[in-house]
Image 1 (tube, rainbow, N blue to C red):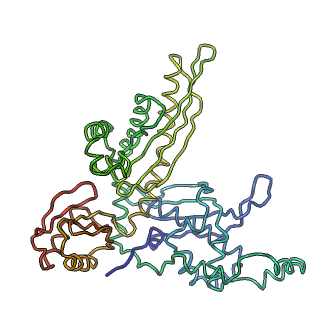
Image 2: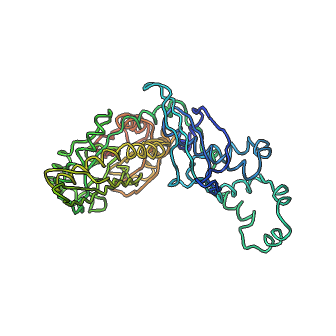
Image 3: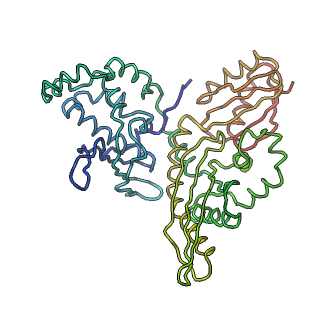
Length: 441
């Protein structure tokens, strides 16, 4: 049985690393901008190249902290406990990242992405890992400090190496997960490349539905024109209007109606659009502007994947303020969509790193021993399985699986046929990423 599969950084065996060290970046006046480093990444997808660039910046910071000789002498340990981490964002301040270069030097079918950034590293997190593994340059540092500084350090109220080591011991390391197989890596790339997006506006938006629909249509226009699958806004409106009572009965309003609709329509990512527009008239010319926020969510769990906010430049119109504001909204949404898609792809790649999360519900589960046997046998065939709830009436599992939902259905039949008492299990319903079965009792 395989335990947990690592996130995208653990898939980094695919990468062609471009790891040139650099000093901290400089501000325009030439002064040092603390903890900001350049990073170069390269890989067969945007997400992998970006993660590689982040860890290259971390590597450059390590060289600054302990020296090039110590970094080279401990390279094997650093690769294991730091550079191949499943979560590069734990060692950088992601909101400070600035893209210097992003270029696919390969082809559409064979992506070879180069990504260059500057980013501020999380120095304390890096120091914790270094201390936990006794990778230091204390002797060199002591030589450079004055006696006064050494006395101050003796009395300073700082975290001790033992405390840092204890903290680092709790952080996930690459050895905690087995490496994803090449087949699983291909599945992750295919999954991310073929995701279905649902875009709709916030029901609490102060703008008129007409204005907000124009923003939704512009977002869908970007998606479809770039070869991505988008749910038609008309389907969203129809389901929201006609199934309100069903939504309330099924969910008890525990999830948003937009998430519920996204689940019903099979979207992998749903995007909530919010906007505020304004307008004015000067000398016979009408001007408009828009402040747009797009929030992206993973459909099955409602997990926030990211948020993109953009404010338009002032646009002009000869007809009306409303027309100017509408133009501002549409152009701003279109300009924001590349970053929306990019963030969604990266976060979803991490989310499915141990398999797609499916909900499996089994009705009539009174025999707990039988259900335990099913769970035990299923665990060896999937990436992971977690019991969410279990009663005599029904049992609910979260199943992490590298495959489509119809393949998981076939697998459920194969496994249940080997469990005494479950040979008659049958399929009740499929909805989104949820499968419902009945034990046949």
